[in-house]
Amino acid sequence: MRIASIDQGTTSTRALIVNTDSKLEIVHSIEHQQFFPHDGWVEHNPDELIRNIQACVDAVGEVDAIGIDNQGESCLAWNSDTKEALSPVIVWQDKRTTVVIDKLKSDGLEEETFLRAGLPLDPYFSASKLAWIVQHNQKAKDALALGKLRIGTTDAFFLDRLTGHFVTDVSTASRTSLMNLKTLNWDPHLCDLFRVPLQCLPKIVPTTGDFGAIKTQYRQTPVIASIVDQQAALYGFGCRQKGESKITFGTGAFALMVTGDEIINNPKLGLLPTVAWQKNGEDPVFAVDGGVYTASAAINWARSLGLFSEFSEINTFCTPPAIESGLAFVPALTGLGCPYWDPHARGVWFGLSLDHTAQQMMQSILEGIAFRASEVIAAMSSCIPSKGPIFIDGGMSKNPYFVQFFANMVQREVCPASMPELTGLGTIQLASDFLGHRLETIPQFGSFKPEPEGYRSGKMFKKAIKMSRQWGK
Image (tube, rainbow, N blue to C red; front, side):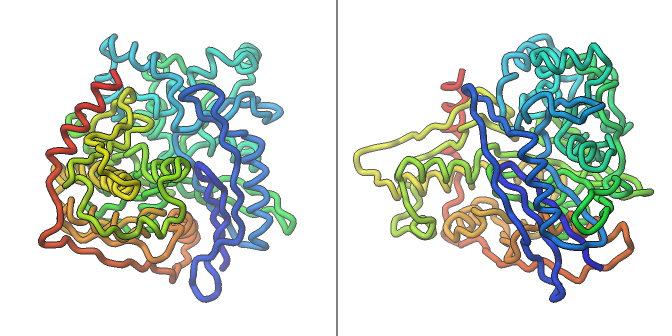
């Protein structure tokens, strides 16, 4: 049996299959444009994403089934009859609704979103973005008046355009701030709160099942799995038991820990209860999520500034940790996620002197991301104690200095994935499970254990975080 996954991410779309040697293989990969029309705005062209998905589907050849994973909180509007996109994709990183979110907070409405959706008020989630489209996009307004408006996350658009199924899976819906986490349905009160027309939203369905079929040059190929990317990665890591966790260090760093049938909703910890997945005919599996908005994006930003040229230059350093010299970097380039949820915070260096070099500045960036990720892990460990290894993947998991510093900070074994693309693997595994097909591909991991003399104090970084938040205000 041959099953493919389409991994539609923030910067590219990839097609993956498991080959005859049971190894995961990238068949096709296409980057797409990023648009920044105003400060804090991030957009994608929805038609470009559709073209790239179709190209990836065609590239895998003849397969028995397809699974698709999506960006999560990115969303748009389209016409129910023509399937024409009526707006750009507003990407999860977009901050255009910050003022609206601040107003909702000042009106004392955050407790309501925590109670119902399990999420804080933050422009990261889809609800305020969808409301912005309905209120500011003339094409969307016209379609709403005619009863032809559809709005939702990108997965619903992809499926509606390519298979004719206007649905979203429950894991993606749990990232919108519009789904009630207990009922797994759209919450009318939350839709009213955000001013999102409920009748325009897609139907919420399990993660595996019948999502229709995509036309390829070979035949109509069924889509049998649809899931948000970070939850797909959690499944790909093999995390199934309560307390097992992973972090993907991509554009941002996203940690997930399985909580099983338990919804852990503790706003004081800054963790977000979410649906990990729901297999067809089964009860949902829950998780807690903690996000660091800026991870490899900070590395790429530093490279664009000329702080380094080749990634091999920042794998090792001949100097002690930068923070030991008093240099700290807070990677809040697009605000702070868990446990602060502060969109106003800004990236800052503290302690710069004439003695510091570009190499030490890069050290401080790597360390800052490790500090932030360790804060998320600490929050998770306080609600479900777990002493097992922390599994990680993404570009930064290939950096030995970063991984070792992170292991020292969390005081646990950190296991970077030797096999890349675990998001795509998780999507294929879910599709295989639905068909009752056992997939032999098993992810392989390295191992970094805490050093006895390694740096592990976060007191100075906590001070830097405080200043970062004050500066933003």
